[in-house]
Length: 121
Image (tube, rainbow, N blue to C red; front, side, top):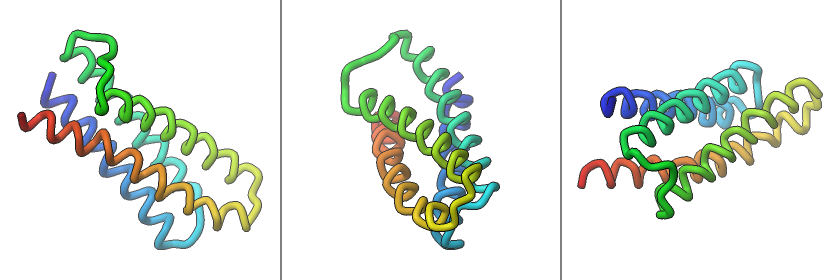
């Protein structure tokens, strides 16, 4: 199960990074970016679920758990907001959306990196 959890979290990293940075380089939010955000969110949620089953605890109050929960909530908000922006189809909002994406990605990296560090111990 550990290999599955690592694979799921790694896929979340790949998809989320692809979506955020391609959106930044393309200069605006496109439909495929939103789809990739949702895929990244799904992989992260699945990977986190598997990891929590491995630890046999519901929640541990530490920096990794707190930032991980925050990251999942922010990723969900980010994916929802990307969908809303695309539905509204306001050009200036679509172009400015990428400013939010980078911040969400950086916040997501905190539990990702701390998870790697914890896993290496």
